[in-house]
Length: 547
Figure 1 (tube, one colour):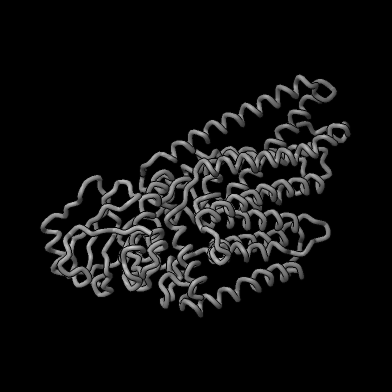
Figure 2 (cartoon, rainbow, N blue to C red):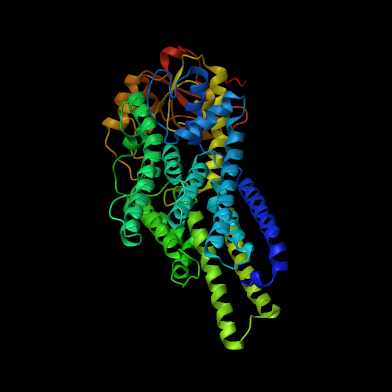
């Protein structure tokens, strides 16, 4: 990819359509990479349950009649509600829409690069616009969380579009309408971290106007930028405060205000090394011939550094492949692309200084071969990372994608069996608050507090596990009186047996040990405790029906 397309118009003509072909290839590669994971997350079914209740009962609730905000992805939940209202399968469509959102992120990067080159009046080859999308397509974390059923891909799209639009607004001679404010509002309505990004870019705007534009008071476009954000986000916030009764989602109270720096450091440091984002730092130090390179780099730093610190403080996540950090990957990919372009430009300049003319085809071919070799090595590394993440296991409290996938595959038959076996007035208590309640459609006590107001607000955090710091106390569970005490579902390859002491303990509290073979379940046996008054003198073995 040469910088001399202006001197070779024929090359420029074929490279422009080639750019779109390259972008299309990156999208296809991303879709195939994401499909290789082909998984759905138990937490995604929490949003699916809220969406299902909105469609069937007109309530954005976990249990009908109980207003609790146990989700943190409002816009994504509305999207899934639209899918269900149209008769679609939430599992299938959440995967497809996630990949579509990620494809939109790749397109945003390519379009920004085209604008960036035109704005800088650069002779750079249009093919450079394919590099950042290609880097994301092979990235294991980006591909993985394009699926999974969660809002990660949608949030990443809003964040990327907002950051890139903000850079355009800062560098344009005639400032366009500050639509980045509206995009930030959409990001904040998709995940709460969008509010953090709005604050960070607001600080950057103030600093930029004072240091670069020499403006003391915010101009009209700054007020309009803020008004677009507030005009969209404030009505939403007022609605949710009135609807749920608390300033923050219930998940904020359920997770507890713990600073988990140690776990967070392991999480973020593995991201920096395994995703090779550390390479971006020396590339950012290279001199750039692009107009406004300082603006792009300063925006990236103002966004990425505080975001990494925030994720470190909350301890990261218990799911593999850095879901919380995926929104930073497009920015890192763009910086890597620009760094590679700067290195290439330096090579051309050094060659001209030494030889007096542009490098020939042989020299350019060697440079291109070296770049392709590095890209192949990156692809091989991510291929191994993808395969390793699909193995079933956990490490340092982080569950692999293979484990998450197995978990949902195991619990889905249980949810269907409960729906077919028990009457609608049945209630359950479970730690896996997603897939089982979604398919069972029974009133549910979330034992890990994400969807339970009492535990979230009245119980102290007792575990250092990100997202699962609290658990419902036994007196509260017994007062809630669920029909079935499931906890974390207990599965086995053979007929289960409970210890006599355990059976006596729960019998004294009104619960009887039950077990059953569940069709489609692997391993096939499942055991739980059932309220004695609901089963009478039935034998311990339960006959499970399937729809």
